[in-house]
Image (tube, rainbow, N blue to C red; front, side):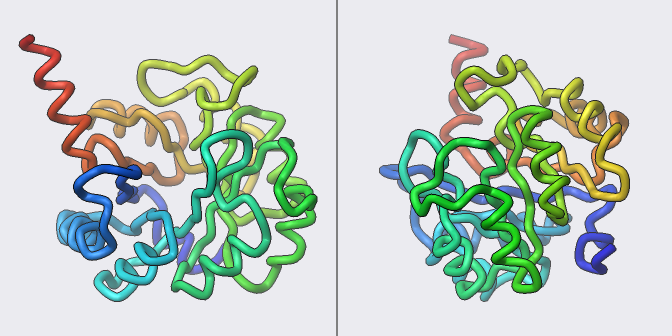
Length: 223
């Protein structure tokens, strides 16, 4: 196993992302958030967009998992080989890629993209279902993640918290390939449950780095 990946076992990875139009959508702001997360104990940072990747890489000492979102439908998490290589150039230590079978803008399959990147970077496969997990493992990725569970039409139903059933199924077939749990880990109890269910590491975003959502949770609870 790669030493970088091995260093993440049993650890917390924090996703630092802001959406288009939000006040926090600025590379310097995201870098400050990432540095705060690192000081709080994050073992790695997941972030999106070339400017954010570069800014965060310049601030933190922990590994950076980079991705480039383009579009809102279909494959939009690092959708092409060009996007992946740009993430590498911006400073990503690991590149996250949509592992679904949906068509990609450059016409390549997921497996073809992974093969083209072999030796250039570590690859994290963002999966929505077990078909994606099998596809990722067959392609020889470095990390499998439950990132897209509940977010792909026709796929798994969206669970209230992390999809622990999916996580357990993925772990059962992954062998030596680490499986990360990402998606709707909103509480410390969720985090512990994911580790107990076999996650190699967990990725938490909204519950740590998205104050708009967190404020909404509290406002909704008392409103």
